[in-house]
Amino acid sequence: MMDQRSAYVSDMEPTPRVFMVEKTDFRGRQRSKVMEDIRKCILDHQREDEDSKKDLAHDLKEMMDEHYGRFWHVVVGTDFSAFMSYCPGSYIQASYGDLVVLLFRLG
Image (cartoon, rainbow, N blue to C red; front, side, top):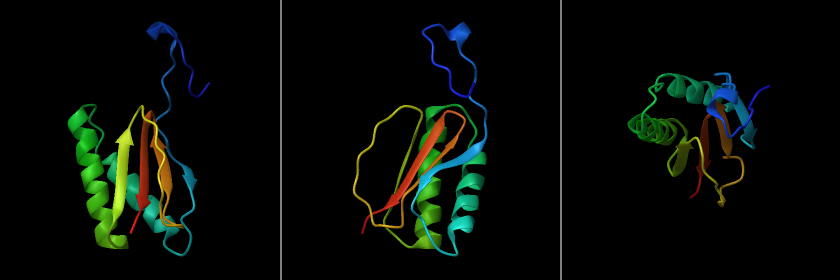
């Protein structure tokens, strides 16, 4: 099982730590490069504390702004809901284990 939910900690199986692009409408020649850049950034921030998530969000935004133009927004976490507007062709949702990363461009 991939993501078993249970009220009892002892019943839960860990989610495998595999980088996956869950959803994207990113198109074009740079798609593979963007995905690889995101994967590398996530793997560089594998600490289990809240500062690591904040650092990951900051570093992802800086990287995306620098390499792919400005106005990227980044959400990083294990439990959140999101509803947003974004520029077509700029939405990426990826995961690594229980960690989920949303990136989108607005502007």
